[in-house]
Image (cartoon, rainbow, N blue to C red; front, side):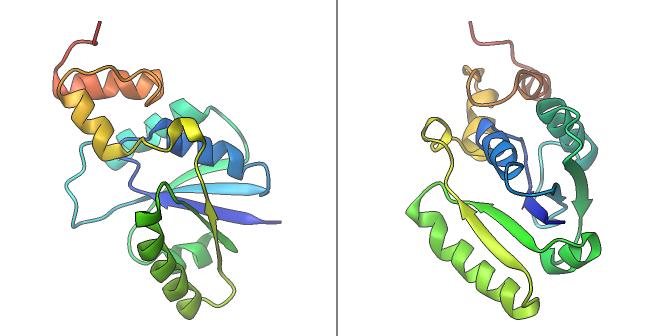
Length: 163
């Protein structure tokens, strides 16, 4: 059984994240969407809120588990029995960091492989930070995030839907 991890802060989950989640499920038996609890970041949404938003966007697919983790991804991968890490590459600028992390993860856990995936053309430009900025200013979120995520963003920022 192939178990993969798709890790990130998902603050918030975007249509790009959803695209990689759905496509990853095509070649793994189980996908663990791992929400990182990064103490160096001040997230907009709590871990529980992010978990609920991801579940709302991806539905009740039995292949998808949603979990939170602290610490090193390689340790979490051992804990859940994962042999693959899925990472998205939106631009060439992402590659250097992701390549370095993949090599470090392989150094720490030789049996753990990293698979790089390119997002769909329609979602390449979407990032969580850009989505937060658009939401903060009441911009149009259609096509950027799931409707439940858009609603949660509007509530967080206290803005009405862009008309």
